[in-house]
Length: 178
Image 1 (tube, rainbow, N blue to C red):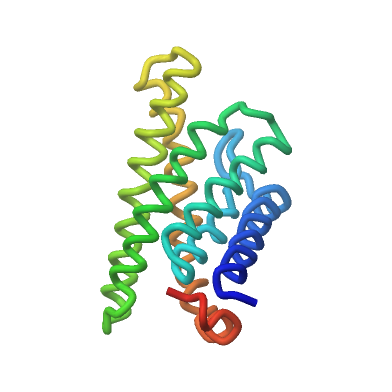
Image 2 (cartoon, rainbow, N blue to C red):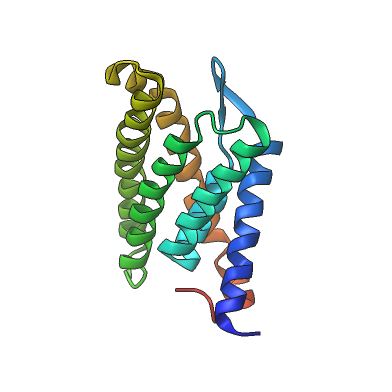
């Protein structure tokens, strides 16, 4: 099978994994907010398969999840946030791939997670919701602080998962890893 076809199939599996993790493993943390464990799949795909694949997993995973559960409610802002997060984290993973010091690489990826989630969730998602719901921007940002904190926690936990999956992923997808 061609490398491109295998990468598309792997990305499709990542999208399905994002949806399943988000739907089936709902861990409540704040009032009415659950951890989005689908972010683990998104970070793993950013880490191993690159920016485009990781961003696609996050964006299409959110779209499918929202269509299955709540229709379009909340989806445009969340999808835009995942574009920002996927691009920034994917680039951080790609740029630090050849870094010899593991601690430096992880620190840069963690910083990318925090900054991209702040920009994605607190700014982009809040702005889309401000336009959709006509609430003041500061109200939307305040409501999205829960998502910001919970999403950062999940994504930071995903980084050691990426490190621990290194052997099997490289063995199975050796020609697809960036």
